[in-house]
Amino acid sequence: MPAVKTPTARAGHGVMLTHPDRIYWPDAGITKAGLADYYNAVWPRMAPFIIDRPLALLRCPDGIEGPRFFQKNAWKGMNAHIMALDDPQGTPPGHLIGIHDLDGLMGLVQGAALEIHPWQASCHDWERPDQMVIDLDPGEGVGWASVIAAAREVRARLETSGLMTFVKTSGGKGLHVIAPLEPVADWAYVRTFAHTLAQDMAADSPDRFITTVSRAKRHGRILLDYLRNQRGATSVAPYSCRARPGAPVSMPVSWAELDALAGPAQFTVGNAMERLASRHTDPWADFHAARRPVP
Ligand code: ATP
Ligand code: MN
Image 1 (cartoon, helix red, strand yellow):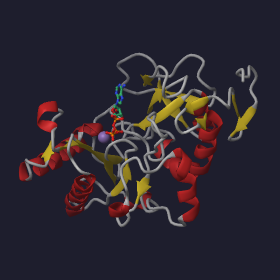
Image 2 (cartoon, protein in one colour):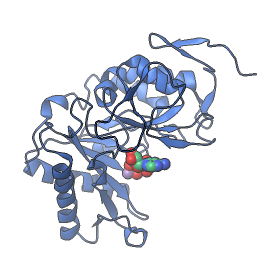
Image 3 (cartoon, protein in one colour):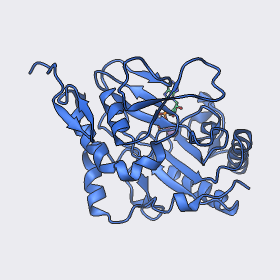
Image 4 (cartoon, helix red, strand yellow):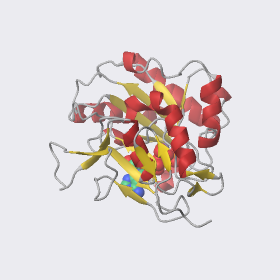
């Protein structure tokens, strides 16, 4: 069927999607309109994690099998509901990307943003992160159970420090443990805190963990990536889809259900709505009330 030239589908409130039948994930059969439906459904839970904060995007205009580019700056011709954010310390020229509402998210769908990667700070307080993330990246030969055990260890250590923790699948290979912060400490402080945590874990279990991206040392170990916690760094948003086969999403889960998960890419655009419909409770419902200052 030839692509339609005129806007035909209305998503959200005021965004027209061109080519709604364009297939973004050929293997999973997910179209642009299908992605818009998914984001409409998860919007109430996803919104606080993506509105009013700088976003980097992985854009794939022809879907996951076509060219892709990782984009941090606003672009000419972007949808009118996407905001250009002015970084008060912006050294590279250009504006960053932000959204403020569901139309903004639909604007990202229209722009073929197949992954949404926010900063750990909002643009209400650019210099003080409001969350800290530890990304667990298993090297070759690391079993899923070991990744879960690592996440629980990160949790135990953070809770000892008085921080609350939440966990989500990456939609790729691992898990992300996130601590909601009161935006009090600055970037340098939070980064150092995360670095120290990762180093302590690697020092205590050198056969299980590493903290540097050295390919050789990675085999059989989990990289504790603490570098997502610096100014300008990003990590994929809760509920964001991934530009990978199967249309996986980064799904918030509860600590109690973690052991029952089959793997880090279990949840997809295709099955997420069923999960949302069948569970009354949001496993991250307490996230925003759980903000604590970094000790
Ligand atoms: P996985 O489970 O596969 O590790 P992940 O989300 O933890 O998934 P990646 O998708 O490999 O990890 O990397 C995510 C982060 O790396 C992004 O949030 C971003 O900061 C950075 N990143 C990813 N792709 C690019 C790119 N093409 N250019 C620059 N930075 C990128
Ligand atoms: Mn990772």
